[in-house]
Image 1: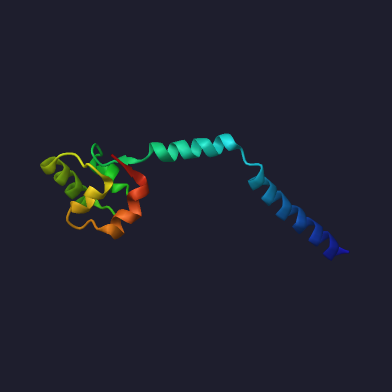
Image 2 (image 1 turned 45 degrees about the vertical axis):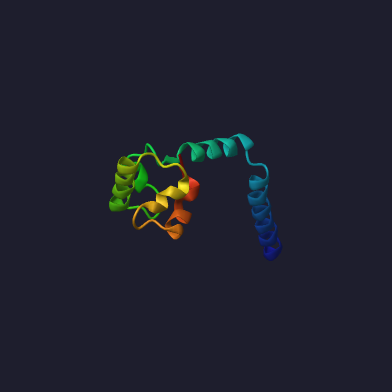
Length: 101
């Protein structure tokens, strides 16, 4: 009898956790998406602190990104950041979805 009760309780727990995901509030999903989009870093205006927030970018790399921008003007494409010494395809792939121009 105890095992039947345990199975029922476990089943109820599993079903309730799945139903929470199925009936998630779409407004919350839209808000999370908007916040994610708002937190994108603009290569042409970002501060050192904003650039450091990107994965794989430390203070030295962020400073180099700003220095390149200062010397050569605004980035014309996201891929232009690879012109900065030490920023290659691999690093760009890490943070490409988090940057804009």
